[in-house]
Every structure is written in structure tokens, then in C-alpha cells.
Amino acid sequence: MADYSCILISGLLLFLLLQSSQSESNVKNSNNNNYKNNNVVKTEVFLSPKFVLAPGLVSNKYYYNIDFPRGHIAIKSFNAEIVDENGNPIPLHETYLHHWVLQRYYHQINGSDFILVKNSGLCGTGLTQYFGLGAETRKTETHIPDPYGIEAGGNIPAAGYEEGWFLNVHAIDTRGAHDRLACTECGCDLYNVTVDEYGVTVPREYKGGVRCCHDGTRCPVREGIFFSGVAERSLYLRYTVKYVEWNPLIVPVKIYILDVSDVWTTVDGSRGSAETHNCVVEYDIEPCPNSVANDGCVHTKTLSASLPSGGDVIYGVGHQHAGATGIALYGEGGRLICWSNPIYGTGEEAGNEAGYVVGMSTCYPTPGSLKISSGEKLTLVSNYSNAQSHTGVMGFFYLLIADSSPKSNPLRLYAPSDEVWKNAKLSDFVWPIVVLGVVVVAAVVVFVVLKGRSGRGEDYEAML
Image (cartoon, rainbow, N blue to C red; front, side, top):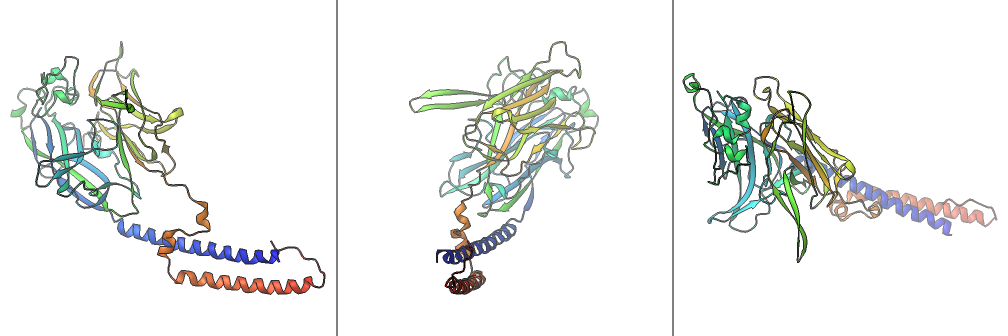
């Protein structure tokens, strides 16, 4: 009799398997359809407030509460470029885009309270932005693959607050400059600056960087440049935002920014040890001894750090300046996570300016294929050619990381999930019941036949 009961058990298992498969399939198809319907990518193009530049002049302004898509959304990409009043792109050899930074915050509607919303990176006070690039903007991919997105517009901290965004645009007009590269590297002696924008004296060892080319400063240009038809002009940062309306099927990502010039220490206290990070942001490069142009001299700077939480790597890209030869992020054991190379222009047109970094290569691992563990030791390596000196260079690395998907539960094979039962319809059960009925009838017939034969003393092999 035990052998025959196996038939009934197998029929029941078949029913559960068929039902689970059918219902899961229905839910999956429904989820896919819902995702497609709710995942229509919208594109909005905005202009920053106007800024006016003349040959040699620097603009480094902050624009608060800029135009930006509202509501609970998932940001899919953010790109930008400098244009004139007619919307024409401006090449880097005329106006150098040192950097732009997009920052999220909350502000009190009828008050002055201001809450900065930082990314998940390690820097304590600097590099808190959501997006930020520079001269490489036009040819650097920033899109985030499905089903991932950067969540915005949700989780307002309290009643009476609303979300806002500010934009920092740092641009240098190099028309007529004696040395365009020196202007873009913001040498303190070249700009004749000894005090930064906050009125703080610039240390003697600080040779160049953003502290010496702040808003309103000027790089030397050729005499008579203003009398040769080159005049001041109004410019804008044109930025394009792609996004989708938020829905539960979108997987949020965390933004991490690593700075190769980060100086971090471990502080022991009564509540245990903690890491403090001082992201210097910039650093200088001395020329290699007896160097000549293109002799292969390479300056390497490294950082070792770990992330507070891990997950799946969705996107990676570096940020470097002219003279760079690439930046790479490694995990424990020397495994390569991402290598981001600079793309140099070869022409005159906007987006292909010779001698400038016009793009950085990006990394898009297959989702789930590349993970960073919580606390895993990471090594960031930034390389520059030091055939000549450079000031104020940078070595950042942007990472988008999603929480790893939970491991599948083998019991789901036999026990449909709550989501399956919730989304199942009566029609989903009709055909499995019919199949079960057929199996049961067949089992009964086999049982009767075998029972009759067994009475005649014949031997039969068990079916299970």
C-alpha cells in the first residue's frame, strides 16, 4: 500500500509545483509589465542662472533651489555642458569647465533651517554631492541601468520641509590666456592670489588649486585681447536630467565617492574605535628628475579604505584632470573592481578639444556579478604623467552600490510566496485542479488493477 500512496503524494507535489510555477509566472509577467508601465523614462532639460565671463575671468558660483524634477522619483542620469545664450556648446579651450557639483538638501519652507543630504561616501565635510564632474562631462556616461535608480523626492524629514537642489559651477575663461593649462590648474603665483574666497590666507606650501582661482579672480591674458573682438559673454550650464516615477520595483543605489588624497585615521574612544576622514580633494605632482616630454614618467598615488556597507557594484567612474593616465579601484587580493581611463580630445570642436580630458571610461558590471563586502579593504590607485608638474589635480572614484539580492529559499519551490497568493486569480487554479483530478483517477485505477493482480501472487516492480 505504501508504494501506491507514493502516487498520490507525487500527484500532490505535482499540483503544488504546477500551481507555484503558474502563479509565479503570472506575478513575474505582471511585475515586468508594471515595471515597464511605471518605468517610462522622462527627460527634462534646464539652464542654470546666467553667469558672465570675460577673458581670464573665473566664475565659481552656487545656485540654490535650482529647477529640478519634483516628486518621488528615481534619477537615471545627469549630464551637463556650458552653452551660450543661443544654446551653442562652448569648447573647453574657450571656457574651461573645472567642475560642476549637484547637491541635494532639505530646507524649512517658512524658516531658515537647512539640512544637507550627503551621499554614502567616507568624506566627512567635502565631496557630499550626488553628481559632479568637470571637463570630461560630455563624453562620460552617467546612466543607471534598470532596475536601479537614485531615489529622490521621498523621505522628507518632517512636516514643513521640502527638498531642494543646489548647483555649483566653476568655469574659467581662457580666451587669450598666455598659458591655458596653467590657468586651468589654478597656480597661485599665476593668479597672484594669497587669500582664498573666505578671507583665509593661503599657506605657502599650497601651490595651486581651487583656493587660488575662486570667483572673481583672473588669469593673465595677452595685452589688447579686449580690443580684438573678444568680449565678455553670458553663459549657462545646460543640464539634462533623466528619471522615472518611483515605484516599488526600482532598486535604490547608494552613492560612494572615494578621494585618493583622503587622509584617514582611527580614533579610539570609550565607545570603541572610529575612522575619521579628511578628504583633501586636491594634490600636486612634482616633475620626475631629469624628465623630458613623453619619457614615460608616472606619478602614482594610492589610498586604502573600506566602505561601511557592501553590496553589488552597479556603476563606477573616475574623475581626473589633464595629465592623467587612469585611475583604478581594487578589492582584497588585488581583484580589479573598475579601471577608469581618461579620454583625450584630438580636435577643436566642443567635446573633442585637443589636449583636454573630454571623457572618462566607465564600468557597468553585470548586476550581481561584482560585490564589495562590508569592511572589505579597497585600494584606489591614481596615475598621472609627471613629465611636467601639475597643481590642483584630483583623483576621485564614484561608485553606485545596491544591496545584494537575498538568497533564494528552496522552500519556495513547494510553497508559493505571499506575493504569489495575493496576486493569484481563480482561473490560476482551474487547470491544476483538473490535472490533479486526472492524476488521482489514474492512481485509483492503477491501485485497483495492481491489487487484483497481487491477489494472484504475481510480482511487480514498485513504480516509485
